[in-house]
Image (tube, rainbow, N blue to C red):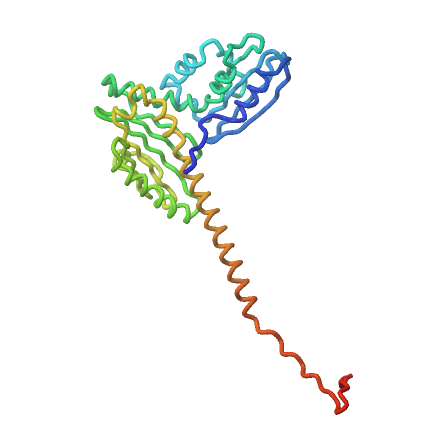
Amino acid sequence: MILLEIWSRIVEETLLSRFQSPKPEGVEVVAADFDGILYHISNLNQDKGKILVSISVKFFAEMKDLRTLEFLEKEYKGYVTDVESGYNFSLLFDVENLPEDKVALARSAALLKRNCFASIFNKYFECQRTGDLGQKRAIIPYRDNETMYVTADKDRVTAIFSTTFQDEDDIILSKIFMQAFTEGRKIHGAPSVLFTHREPPLELQGTKVATGDNIGYITFVLFPRHFEFKVRDHTINMIHTFRNYLHYHIKCSKAYLHSRMRARTSEFLKVMNRAKPEPPKKAEKKTISGRSIQHF
């Protein structure tokens, strides 16, 4: 299994090339990421020494009540600037005044999307840890027709992802994948993972959620051992990319199956071509003297 990168490689490499350049360079890059995320890297007021990094998040409005801005401002203290028009959050870097570890700074900026999701999970992890169970369920429409739900309970935090399958074959493959994750609970310390098709899980029954033949719900039940401080970042890294991880491997599986089918078909065609009978050769007629008789 391949784990998807949790940072934007385009953002990281673009910033690192400008940070390490011997002289300031102009930049104008627009990059897309999973979940409808859009990055814009440019120079502030055409000043090559000032690099502006902005991110557009479709569900940013739903995260404001979860103190996402406070989380990001703390995470990027010293680099937060006025938000660029058309975007939700912006960072400003002065190439003449950068820290010694430029690689870590570029990686940090490339984690903007991850940190947006992290603000949600951190909020509910802290609610569970402190016993503040009055926080209402987070409802984050992280993709078109797909939603994430997060709740904090007395002994756990539950995260539910709804996902839409475009093809009937995807549903079959997803069930096979999720069966493996469901059996993963047998591994000591692994979180419980549940998958429901068509109908929402018990936690969402009675609410207005999407149902249908192409709708699936993935439920993660996280206990305090899964989000204690020493493992919290790793848990967030894994869980917020799971939807994309699932669909990526479904597509890879279909591509592998198709390649095997094409290879097998090619082998069958070779066998069939070898099995074709050769056309009979016409018997050559000769005279008594041994000369061939030609037919016109």
